[in-house]
Length: 203
Length: 291
Image (tube, rainbow over all chains, first blue to last red; front, top):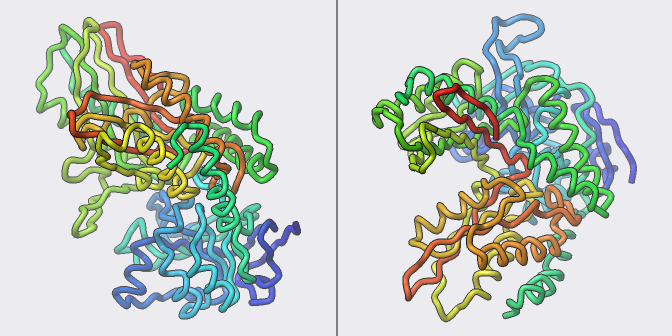
């Protein structure tokens, strides 16, 4: 189980080197994206001004505070609490994010499904698990909000964060078909019978 | 005792912010218990990160989780309390709006059809208000629950029939916990409602999911069932964040209500590991904040 430090944006080789169970810390840049952001992009054809090529996106809608624009807060926002939401709702957006926008890494919680696993394999991407609900800690890894797009969708805007030491994150799905979530689901299915037997509730 | 509605508004505001920042003692102790018992290496790391996050939130006076949830206020009014009901509801709503604007908090509440966000954490019938009465003299208790969506999306209702028996109720709980997997931010509190009408059944599940850890169902058969289900759920190996491990749930809580001779309803409502709630108790002596 290797640990990788990846400066963003990164190339395909950096992502292909990741294996399920490895840990990753990201540096420099990270984008925030969410349900409404991706519905706007992929269902309503909204153009985005920010270039996601080679970047990582985190499934988030942050708590922010409006501040006067300054070198420390160029977008006029300061981060208050930035965490991660459940990824599975956005499963159908993984493939177009990778294919159309060249996204390399998706950070989320709870995992993604088989269609995402195939997209990661085909395009060279990976899913990095952050601990959901640990947003106070995650916020300490974000140094500034560098830019924001589609802000009419606030808080589900497209956010560009400046980051420092974002991690450690766990590689939950890699570009070789590996998925920690699929492996756990298989084990859980095997244990279901024992749980039902203990309850006297076998079918 | 005459309720001071300006004070109620202020309390409603403080409770929302307090609930988002301070995890109740019973949940923190529950996390320590799970950490001690956990045997999986990844799961131990995940639980340690959760514990670290609680400390960072307290140190930085920050929110535990970015999800400000759907705000719920449960108000219990004792005997000998004078108030105007419509004004009380308006005061709670204003407090909720002010917390959102003044802190500020992310408003997580939208119109269900247009998806428009008013940026007040309020909307049609939200905040959710439950007003009930009890015997305590000159006492008003307000419980605030910011119910996070990751776990709220893990809500399920099934109108089973009597011939399905209690075995089907148990299978339903196990299968919904498996279905929810890591999406609901385990370790969780699994709330189970049994009986009632369909809406009451789901409400019971919410009461169960937000009940204090260590508390038991008042009905002895319900208490026995929740102990059995707690053990069974933690045999599944879903683990913290669904990444595998022993700690799938802090507990399964069961709440029950009488039901119809033809019915056997069961509901599941899940609370994530950031099982947030805050409480204020108002008496003629003043206001006391707790969990």
